Amino acid sequence: MFVLVAFMAALCMLISSSNRVLRLCNSLALIALLVLVGEMVLRVFSQGPQSLWGGFFSWDALSALLLGVIAVIAAYVIVYSFSYMEKEVEEGKIPQSRLPWYYFWIWMFIATMLWVVSTPNLGLLWVGIEGTTLATALLVGFYREKAAVEAAWKYIVLCTVGISFALLGTMILYAASGRINGYSLAALDWRCLVGMASQLDPALVKLGCVFAFIGYGAKVGFVPMHPWLPDAHSQAPSPVSALLSGVLLNCALYAILRWHILVRQTSLGPGFSGKLLLVFGLISLGAMVAFILLQKDIKRLLAYSSVEHMGIIALGFGLDTPLAVWGASFHLILHALTKANLFVAVGHLVQMTGTRQIPKIRGVMSLWPYTGGILLMGLLAITGTPPFGTFRSEINIMAGLFQNNHPILGFLTALFLSVIFAGFLYHFLGMLFGTPGERHLEDKGEGKEVLWLAVPMVLVLILGVFVPESLDQALGQVVELILGGGGEYGEFIEITRVF
Image 1 (cartoon, one colour):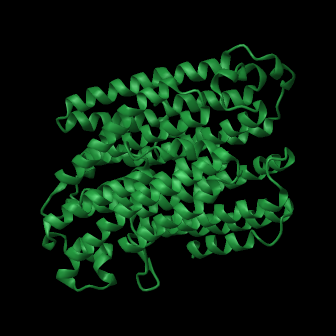
Image 2: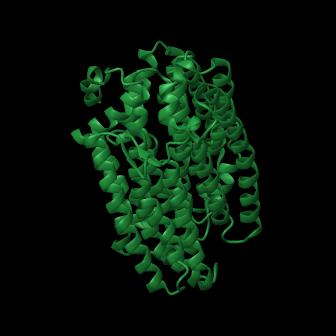
Image 3: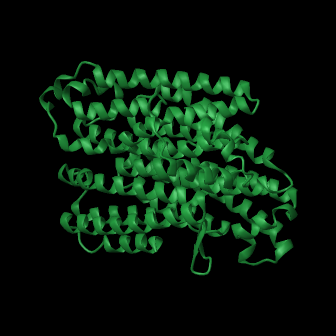
């Protein structure tokens, strides 16, 4: 089973520090992971929910969606890590002897994320989220420089405080469900909770929901719990930043969505948790405008963009319309692909220029046209520019805001996105088409091998033009799960294809 494969892969990374052995071990582990995850995802979307080991592990449409995202982004990041980390060793930034530990913690990180989306128990889900914190903290501080260590400690402290709130919320839910079905491990089982949702004490559920949203929201990066995120993303190795932004934030959001689905089916209805998502989403989106406009560090810019996009996704899931939830589910996939690609491309660029400062990076298109082309595609995708898929997903969410009688929220969202687009355009056009500095003029030329880095961007572009029917139906199953299986998906399936 793929969770065990990831844990075993982590141990295998410590066999040798040889680059050849590490590449071989990682490649074999990735093949096994992709095959097993791919098989499970196909089974879930074709046959319905699946379980293993007497129900200890369980997967439905939502968890299968996250499984696929984790596996694809993990494979992309690890393959990129081969050349990236070997160059870091060549430049003396880390010793060769520490390279096995890098891959060990990467695989531990992947294993804990797979655990999060594979357990049906909200208590064990909390354990998995906490596990991701422990694994990634050592990756954030991997370079052992002062700024990296400070970022790691900040990450640990803020996320641990946040996750403590989530634990309190989980305990309150346990108290509410234990009164009905007995105080056992099953009292936090997702499948049992859904069945008894209408009997749960609404006051306890409401209190637990607030604590859970704040706690897991800290890990998502919702404002005002986000300060750890730009520091961690900027100081971690670029492949780690890609995993943090593309996958970890989605895993924390997954935990919130589990609570959202449960709360919707209690006597509180969809309004309470939906409003919390709308509030966190709009604040996170709006607060990032100033940070993005004034940012000078390219990796911190991408980190603040992650907060913005998690806000967009939260807005979509917070609306009680199939159109917006479909758009949010689609945007979750597209943002993971886009942001992982951007962090990888920027990591490659930072290695070539030796700086993360935006004003010092100029003339990328003339010096490194392939890298520049990838960054240009990333700029268009991350800002939701047509014909990239992010335009389709954002339009669906925007349409959902107006469809659900939120014209003011729709106007503010459009305004914030427009200003953020202008900010990204200002930063990226200067880097891409500005006059190169003298110290970079001798760096002209790059190999065509960097073109493979653009694979995620090509996928995002294709999904903007054409959404395969199988993916559309898979997202439809996610919509039905989140909205309670109301059968409304067929009513808007043609609408989504218009965009």
